[in-house]
Length: 543
Ligand code: G
Ligand code: G
Ligand code: MN
Figure 1: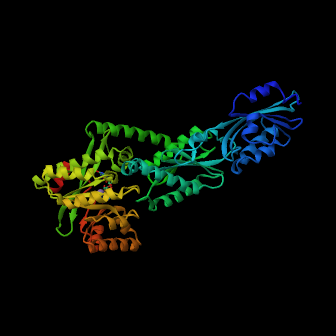
Figure 2: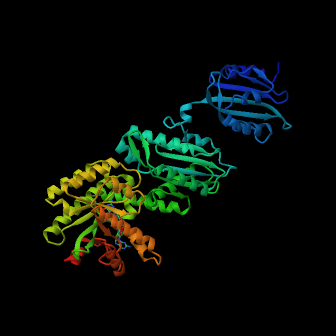
Figure 3: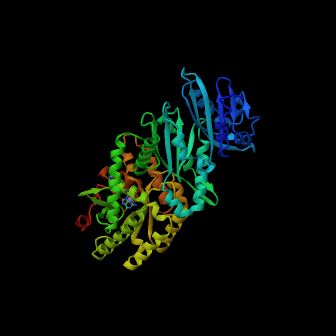
């Protein structure tokens, strides 16, 4: 009999619930007494033991043993009186279950350890792990203490995942998520932890690492995911954006860290999709501006696209020495300022509203075109579309329908495909382009050569012309421009060999015009002729 641990009170508590396991420990005699359910469930050699540490440790999952050892040692050495941790432990059936321990050491008047008691609860496996990916559930982050630790968190989100779901369906989307989760897990270091943050968002806890390390990890992830992956019968490439926050540098609580990660991620999505943004204090105020813009954009759309306007920029034909066409460029009038598309198109893409605005652009462009054609102002026109408008063939069908109603000749209209963001329903894009070209519409690949995927895209989706981006053309101004020169010349030759036209953008001066003309570019667009201007101004310019 040990008067400390053989008490009716312990007997009573020990039998109070089958799924709570208890033990008491007498530091003076080093004797431990386990509750009956504990002995049974973990198949312990006996109710009493003198080497509880070994008995217990031998059952804990090897990956989690340090959690237990660190925590219990802190109590036994007197550093703290409370024992609180979670780990996996093997039960009598040989499988691991999660336990949460809450223990307390009390001391006598002289401060000597007197009695330790511990209640251990099984925490449900379902809550611990995401049911789909089996990654740690984000709720588990609550049990991570950031005090006294340094490290970094990286939040990674798949871009445009809403689009993936609407293109491929939920089932396939879940397969993508599992595929990505497995891949990310394989990129974790020994002490790193990977949590399922949201359906298509993943959070790395990288103890002992800094933001540079997280940034490099992000780049590796990006490179890996942007390769073509074969999942089932689909070939897909994915793009990710991310946010980084360091602890304790930026914050030392879970809530603050997570909101800073979100800020970085949001910022990346809006300004530099496909990259990772590390938290800084000024991000918060910038983000507020963005939130205000989002709200104002939605209001504009609801009020019948109030404030949206098309500007027009002429496209000059070298051969005909005349204005052959124009490009419609979207503007948004907000607070008496004209907002450029680079700022608001990503927001519309993110919210999905680009579908509605894209339809409006198309209809407005055709309205103007019909008017100009009647008045003999211009006979061709081009407008931009976002890759998100091709998640199915609805947009192509709508354009064909709209063109018929307006009585236009389809070959007078060019649809520009703007840069792609990685996640694309290639098949729907291909079907749309084929549908439009069959009808007679012209299709142009915008920003050609800026993305490494454009060549591959051109091989599988034939178009009528390519547009060489102005930043590419500006390369010709550098003193040692021979590489840019050779590349642009190669693009032009390639286009001509397959029988398609080349539009050179960014023709700002006579020098560039001459250079591009000598290289064989068919059509010219740039400030030399005119900036994009409102409708009436364009009419004065051309008329
Ligand atoms: O007009 P600006 O000169 O700032 O154009 C910037 C970019 O915005 C263009 O390269 C183009 O890709 C995009 N853009 C302009 N108008 C539209 C539009 O109507 N729809 C889409 N999707 N993108 C547009
Ligand atoms: O959709 P796309 O990326 O092709 O849109 C053309 C973009 O190029 C628009 O942002 C337009 O304002 C811009 N642009 C057109 N001509 C010039 C030019 O001569 N110089 C510069 N800097 N930008 C131009
Ligand atoms: Mn364009």
